[in-house]
Image (cartoon, rainbow, N blue to C red; front, top):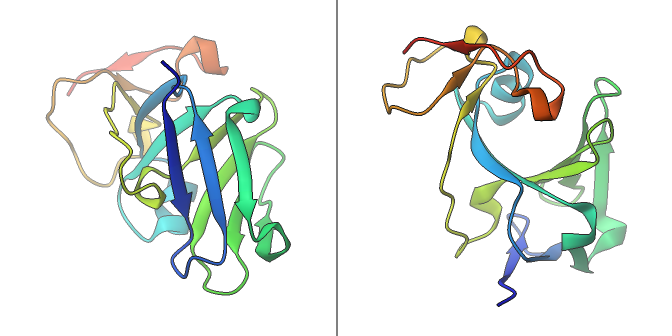
Length: 142
């Protein structure tokens, strides 16, 4: 069965659809995500680009690229965060809180060496990223 979820920005000017299942879900502790989200931890869900479809408001999507690793997308009307494209691994990170009925089930923490808040939840804590996403795959202790 093909699951579908509808997400949007804060004001609803941009709407998008997700179909299928994400490749991975978890929490990011990198300083860039912490600064961008103004929070110590940022939830993520990584999707194939063909699983993400803009339904409304593509003209309202703006982008900020601090590096070539990630292209952050947000609504130019309300500033609401939408997604982040990762060109090097050809995946799109959809912010779970932008999709109201999406069941975010994290399986890992990434960039845990940069943490500002320790989380004791039994999930693997990657120093940087798993090998399948271009990292070292090194797991840190809780």
